Picture 1 (cartoon, rainbow, N blue to C red):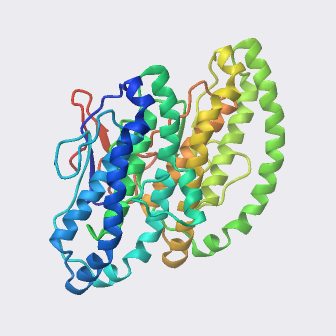
Picture 2 (picture 1 turned 90 degrees about the vertical axis):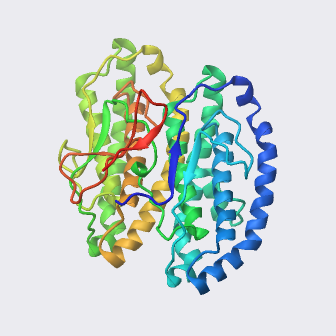
Length: 434
């Protein structure tokens, strides 16, 4: 995966938030939102001229390109402040002041005219995914009912909603929610940079392409075995009919799993730990759900088994042995799950979009893009952790941050750059040198 020409940089690792500014964050952001709306309206007028000039000359006009760079950078910083991704008030456009979150653009270069001519059509999938990721980040380009629905379930917006309450109570931004927002805003920045002809490289949906703190240790993980990203056109085309037996089996197993989960809940209330036999049964159920979902959404290619056996599928959920749990968290598990299901709902929309894109691409090329696969794997990992927490398989809450990507049990088919990493003694996320 090549280095991204449009790169997001995060120069502030501080997660502390002032409760006063958090409480009034929307009001404080209003002046910037008004200015951003004005600049967006101007951009709508300038965009056709920018497109025509680039189409005829092959090179974006410097003056117009500078304007759209300013707009993309300013929009990123305004939404980063609005969504509590950073605590510092954003600078006004044109001041070039340093900010906690920034974007660097590639030097102006000649672009393929065919790509320029069909740029809006080519950018449409990326814009849909950016809208689903952010829930409103988009310079005012919203109108259709479909896009409004996607924006309503945006991952960054959902994270901001939950972070608002968390910051008011603790005065601190949860690391996972912040990293999820950086991923979402970073992808949207790449998508609009591509739309506005600031780069001719398609935006990268892989979480590892954006700054992120390392994944914390968690008793529930998702690993992907070596995947050359090839997908059978035949099984891709008939993926839904092939899934019908699994859908029936999953429905039947879910009824039994619900009864077992109730028994596990009662046992955990009394003993403070789920019995090993019940834990094994529910762990197999969660693994099977992960295997089937990975197959249905094209995260993996192989047809899954029906037993949820550990180590039997390329997309594998690893679930640790049972451990003691607080009876209070067991008793209130349903309430504690509500924030996780808010994020899961948003990520579910993203997973659905990546599956649709992967289906079409695989039909034509016999492969899926690595970034699309990795974005889906991130959503699948969070889903697995959420359901493991719901079924009392772990006392650890699901981690919302995308991390540097899922782990691999075997060497990948092609070399990849090191993922973004967090350097503890320096308040900045960077990409390590390849």
